[in-house]
Image 1 (cartoon, rainbow, N blue to C red):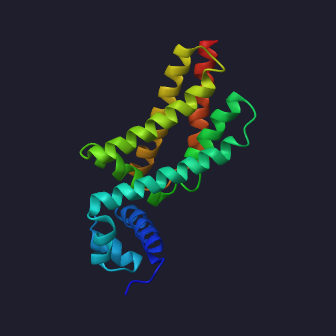
Image 2 (cartoon, rainbow, N blue to C red):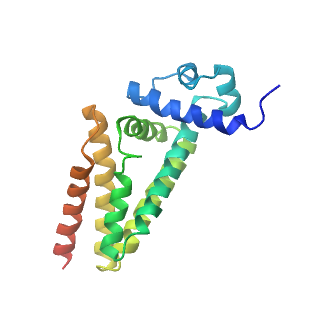
Length: 194
């Protein structure tokens, strides 16, 4: 007989194990069995909860997106100006919960999966839209809409690019350096927009 209340705990263990296993391998070249073994559950139970590897990866990305949203909200709560809100968004995106080796590898695997999976692509669109919208909201309070749109697009591309660069380098990047690069880009573009 199954233990009551264990499903959420085991699901979370499988998601954490997926992040760690993908992080270790640096790709989606992992099996549900490897993930389940790391989580301390059977492969059959992992399949029961998620159905297949793609659904487990998508559940993992939903979890990471939820964590990112929580971090953004936490950082935004401390911001007092539109420019401060932009810095808060950057701190959340490069926070310790998101910008570590295993999570960066999971994000890179997610980008790859989004090319072929409609469900993963839809999640990526939610992420991209949320990031753009958050940046744009604050930038429109500082500059005109055309410049704000261009700056938000460039900053979002830099964030994703820094994740990809860090994943391909094979080690966690320096979060403060990544934040400084994006901050510098935004400040430079705001100066140009005048």
